[in-house]
Image (cartoon, rainbow over all chains, first blue to last red; front, side, top):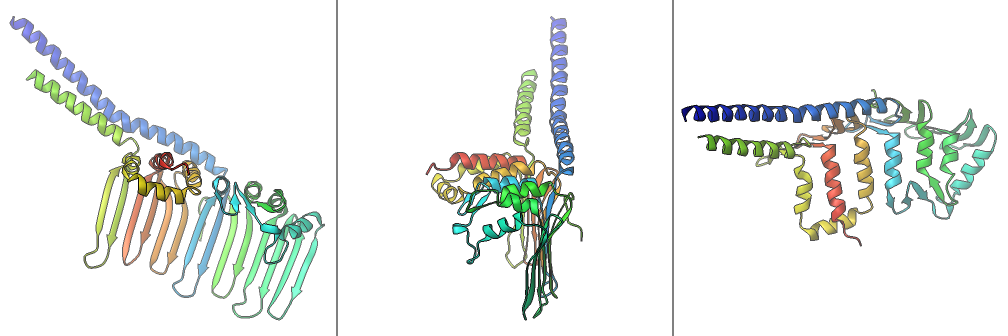
Length: 214
Length: 145
């Protein structure tokens, strides 16, 4: 009888030990497997993000409170998010420009004309307030604005023509933003917009780095 | 004695398994400090898997109204959150305005939003996976019309 009690006691102790071991294994296993899964996901994500193109916006204001803005957006993410927006004029990554007019200017017609013409300078306006130059050179659409008065703004916009092509590839009254971003993501490191005046600088550029460096 | 041990073991296992399940998505951290007399200081560390449950308990009437307004934005928000998975450690926005500083970034698979100013500090850290579940829950509660 005593032997049976001892045997039962030994068995229950073995059972308890095994259960506790299992419990510890589960406890240790949950974070480990989660960590491994996260590490694998992180590694694949970082591998993937190495090939990603990032759109950077940097704004520096030296007046007032000295505002600084740094925005970094993966182009692929912008493409997908914009494609999912269906609000007002932006539908599925395309923006409707009613009657193809923007302040009385037929934007699409201008872009179309620039796209199909040869390299050269298209517009040069020299006035008392500013100088404006629109040109096409080396596969880029170049827009330069130099203000002569207050602030001496200097605006430089440099857009690859392939991006312009993609932009006007949609229907008659639409600009295809997502298609433009898709083409932009295949471009090399590119400075897109640069605005400078005596108090503010704005830069928009594209590269493979995830952060903007000061 | 043996019976009590078994009950304790069963109870312990249940608590641990339930704890493991609740903590599977990690922890979300909400911290608000208001620097004024009588200002609030809120510091919450909650299991992130509770987030969809919180959405579930928002009164349907309030939820429906908010979702009707957010209907156009919700699919884009879901896509953005899905995309965030690809960038577990990235800086998306960094803004200084005088003595105010705001940052939006991902760190270790968590979305972090930090706002610091002399008046208040707000820090929010949320696992991206939980955010996706939260948006799924919101979408499932969205009215058809």
